[in-house]
Image 1 (cartoon, rainbow, N blue to C red):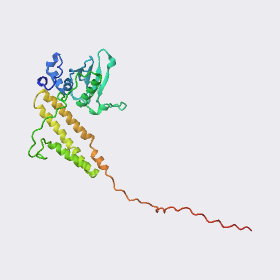
Image 2: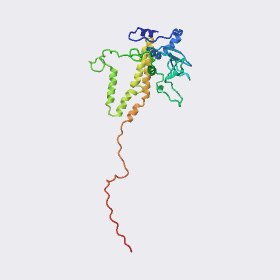
Image 3: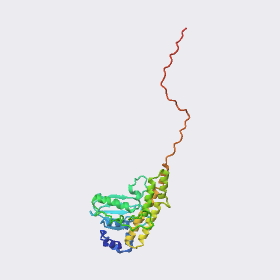
Image 4: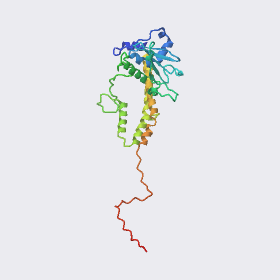
Length: 306
């Protein structure tokens, strides 16, 4: 595939693990399945893990071969089966299994939603179908077991990119003219952060949060649109790596928008922190006079007897 050729030709990046060796690799239907799961298989192949896509109990799964002859199954919910398209489930379940040793069975990751109120959800349940947390969990567990052929370096990871030298600043960009590089939009956000640090009240801080969290015009909403547009631009290359990148950017757009949904009440909560002016103290009883030391009682008058 084109993506594999590009990686092999790049002297700065180690090659991906090879494609599966079976006759389906050259069929259009399998290639479409492979493309739909590339956001899962590509980062794992970058770590030297061989992957395949096959049919499980009721849906397509990613099978990952491990050095000790065990394997990972990365699948959508199987029972009941997922109604979402292959590669885009509502959650992922990762198990480690061995063909000859059932004691090695374990669940590494489970972000599939459950409607069973009696079942305690795992911490990753909030990630849903997002791929980066899934890859990170696999990284950590395989590293613990000593089964990770090689960790992904920054220049090899599909999700981490090395810093690049920026072009000369645009003449209309704000900032001192002698700056070697200018990050116009980063500077704008930095200015917003400075204003937040200097806010004199929680009401002022809430107004600045509104600039970030407004669901239509806020920074997070626009950032989600930005990543989505970048994903569409990557697709225009009509290359495997372009499609892979588009999936990563779509994941980023989804996570940014989810963050906005999680924090949608943060502005109101910040505003509610504004201290109220102390109300005047009202009392229905007069103030007490300071207590005086007790005085000796006068002696009782003598009693007269008849």
